[in-house]
Length: 367
Image 1 (tube, one colour):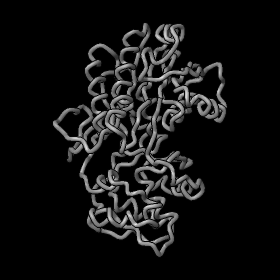
Image 2 (image 1 turned 120 degrees about the horizontal axis):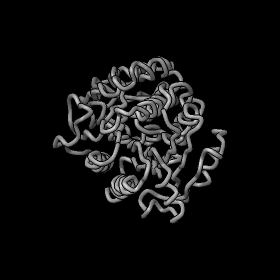
Image 3 (image 1 turned 60 degrees about the horizontal axis):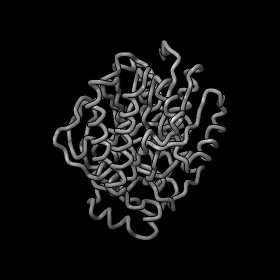
């Protein structure tokens, strides 16, 4: 990648969440001189310290700040806040809550208020060169068809509080673009690392990947609906590499980037591939959505699927995310790998990791 022309002083919110950890790893590898400040909620400080030990990074480069994006002055002391606004050159705002069943008030508190607090801080920064905001492709809500990167408010409805809150947060970022150098990044469904398969939770497509990999072969897996629409999956390492690479470009300010697979497979094809490589029969196809939902409530089957209603909706929703801005900015490097090239790594990790299915899956409060 093109090296930044300056020594950056970087603030990252949301550590030690999975995406924030992977972003820190990317920056440590690519920017040996950068200073990194991690805003960590007080109840996550011990875990943050453990994760940094795993990264084996020089602690002279990394500063843990106990704070919260929803608090005044990010929950920092007066001295810490003044040091932050005097030195930081770049922000990566990763912190959010993305549990699809979250209460609307909680989603808006973290996702919308948190984004506005970051903007308030950015306005005070003396040397800010870029504010990078991690949004989601699902700000498109219930829209169908081709979604362009520059589009946001197109009169869409929202299927859950997460989508709506991320939409409102992005609205705030868009309005501030007139005064601040902001880049917005919208990943689609994030899956594990394309090299190692690492993931930290069962969510989204992992409900069915886990079912195909770990359930007895005599148990049929229902495919929700026809499954003939694109299922846009992106590995976390691509998301972090692309966001980092694009964020270092001077011409990325004031623009939005879809971090998506430009050639996604259909949902049915994805799970046919999973079944083939896991050595079991493919899912039962073309079950009506309502029947699939009922089947997934049976006690044994529910243990593996947890009835991911929102994810099943995506199987039958025709949405195509245009990513021309992203492809232009990446200039042929660090592109999203095709799913078949890293699917074996995802499956192997699911088999070996024994991720806890009893956890409240899909929950992450970052920052």
